[in-house]
Length: 400
Image (cartoon, rainbow, N blue to C red):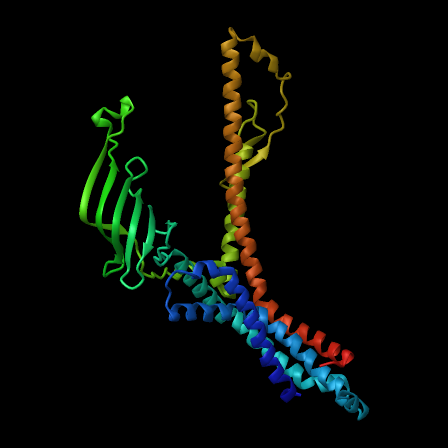
């Protein structure tokens, strides 16, 4: 049974892993293309991505392998012969059940020990790739805007020498009010040795530069001063970091995707305590706040602690006369009263909405940690359940 099952298991596992890796590639292809990444960086990213996809591919491999194994046995009537000789289906499945137990135990330790490290490394590497500047590949007869604060137009270029011809450059590094427009007959683009700046060597052109300076006093009259410069040879540097810089992995390890069971349990206790304490403090402040001049709770010292207890005498002596606000000495006073009341109500609403957002984010983080904690066990259960679905189904279908 093991000789029939294991080849199919490994085959289906790698096929499923390849499929989910292709899904990962289509999802993040825009972040990888055009960045000039080395093969080692891409290979490392796909290696960690493959590890994170194991929980998706492993249960599917178990299901398909068990289905095909028992389907082949039924199709060749080997299963019928085994049953005719007095061997039950459970006894036939016994070696594979033992194997599934070992696979489930290994899957649990993989989920708890290997997967958090792989997920932290994968997401850290992916975020680092996203922050890398794209490779400079200037197209012909269209504006190139991948260089920060600069648009570059090239009519045509020489691929052998790297020379660019009929160039138009819009430089807004110092803001739109102090922008520069550079026209050049030709030029060449390159990087400095440390790859932190872009170097432009321009030939035979002119530059127009706005000079917005309020101290000149001419801008107020509707005129904007500018400077025009003709040049035959000009060198310009732009800030452009083309290096690949890895982010610190510790930040992702503190997220729920980078924690094991012990760390998740500790985080759930800490976040749950914070949520309860924040909720209690908000409740205490709401109870302590007076409404229409009345306090519905009073402070009582119990065993050295201040507690809020309901008041017995919260009823008004007479109904509140709202119309008395309009009996002010002048209409402006009445308008002032209403404006102040409306402003106070808006402030309280904004305060409560902000506190609600803070508490909801904490609650969301608590739920995410709880879901990740459950995922540590779901892979093992999924492997066993999918095996007990696939094996009897294959025996019934009798098609491998």
